[in-house]
Image 1 (cartoon, helix red, strand yellow):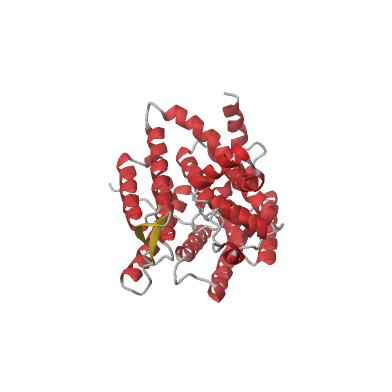
Image 2 (spheres, rainbow, N blue to C red):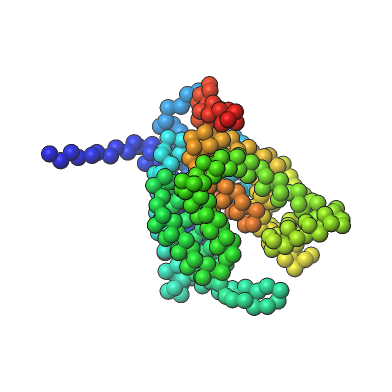
Length: 396
């Protein structure tokens, strides 16, 4: 006798998956010639807001949770009103919508949606509809090689997508991640490196897979778990502090301290130099809204500020920046308590990646905001799981 398994999907879950697909399509076209912007972007935002409101009224929330949600949306609305940027609002909507959805389902939907869109963009480039964006990569004035964006406006932007999809896939597989999966991820990203010549992609994926191998090893598993628990909690505040303090010190330091700081700056391809130039010429506001650094082009013949934390600070403002770091830290404590070590590895990778690239202020590359759903869990219980387990972990 064959037993048929019926899969039931609730109406509110359909809304969530539809929202995820729409946002994923929108994010997939970021940094391409067909990026959704202007009036099209406003239409997408209206659709997303409509789906969110529909979900809100279809779900039954406890009064406490409903008030928390309304408070978060109020903050997001203030940010949108002050800056005109919808990124923070979308982040909060995603966190709220995903509250009851299994993480594996979320990662699967995002992975498939983004992979399909990547194939479409690359095919449009191969067919000549989109530019290949060939870029010559130089160092110290010497030509090294050429990288290709294949539809994306810079080879590094294509590299972002390779790394993003790899991390999403790793999170989807989670404890089911096999050695063959890890090997395939490395091989595909080596191909990505061959196309884009992005050192960040190469170093990041090798670092991530190395940590995964350490975690899966019976000899290093326990020590790796302890390190991951500690690092996951401190990594984002630490990276934020590094991103702000080092450029500030570069302005005032002398002697050996200055030499050390400039050596560190060199390791990050002079990214901290661009940050302190931004500090000199642009004010940091409460609600942000600063996303154009073109004045640096006039002054220094270079206007790119790559550091994700600094772009977050200027884009979201002091209030949005603090909330972002606070939300992320609170939520990752919950993930630590649940002992989801693969998620911790991906989260740490994103946090460190943010020092080198502008990936934090958009769901296009920063999927760690998926874990913000844990905020609602924090308010759902008198004694939250992470408080109890985390306290036990600290007392070990």
